[in-house]
Amino acid sequence: MILLVALLLAAEQVAPATPTANDQCKYEPEDLELGFDAFNQNATAGWRALSMRPGCEEAAANMVRAYRMNAEAHLPLLYWHEAHLPLLYWHEAQLRAVAGDYTTAIPLMEKSRGPTDQDKFGWNAYVDATIAFLRGDHTALEKARGRLVALPKPSDVDAKRSWPPNLGVVDGLIRCISKSYKVAYGPTCRNDLR
Image (tube, rainbow, N blue to C red; front, side, top):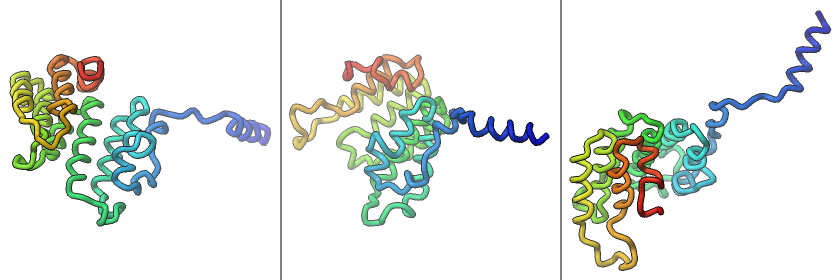
């Protein structure tokens, strides 16, 4: 009996633990303490780093939700800006859409809209186009694209900058409306990335 216990203990020490998908998609609590830019825009930290791991889109969405829900607790109020909240809703929604959860993604995308009178870059039309794609509504998608294309280019935008923003993404959604969001949002469906 003692020999059996000794063999089992030795086997536990020798056999390395095989990481599971859940282990791969874990993040450290410290990640939720990052400043907004480090959490939201850094490819080596925050939700973007987690989302780049295969199969971790849902975990990254949950990470964004946790960060958003506790933002005041881990961001000095001095650095917190009202504009951060819609971006967090948007990125959580995108991650959920990439994971195939359109039902949860759509209401989050709706919360990312900005005030119409301040939307000189067509953000709301882009949001509407994406929601139309997720609903499979080609007519609404084309209408949102039309609103985006009709935007006048502001005089303070560099003349060399392509206009309007996100048009390549919307065209990709139209081109690949029968595919998943993950595919349609990606480079194979977009002319602006080829």
